Length: 109
Image (tube, rainbow, N blue to C red; front, side):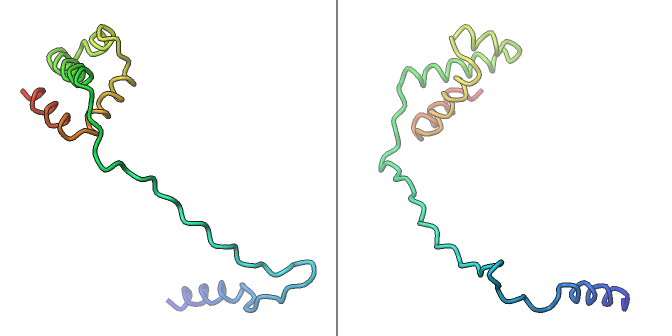
């Protein structure tokens, strides 16, 4: 225990104690001005409504993939979608609470 205290005090003692006064070679630092407050983008008062055709596409793709998971890539290709397109489509569904509820209801087993 005394060895640990000695090491701690020795480490603290190596800091030199006082900070030297600024010299012409080392000017005093001035605090940086406060950063301007970040503006938070305004969110719309209403949630966006999802296009009914896009919602039907999301539902049909989900059902097809659920029925044949090993054929997911072929199903996407057949629908003209890439993996990124599907992710964007699912994001659209998640933005509209009504669409999300309908999607959930119609894709449940």
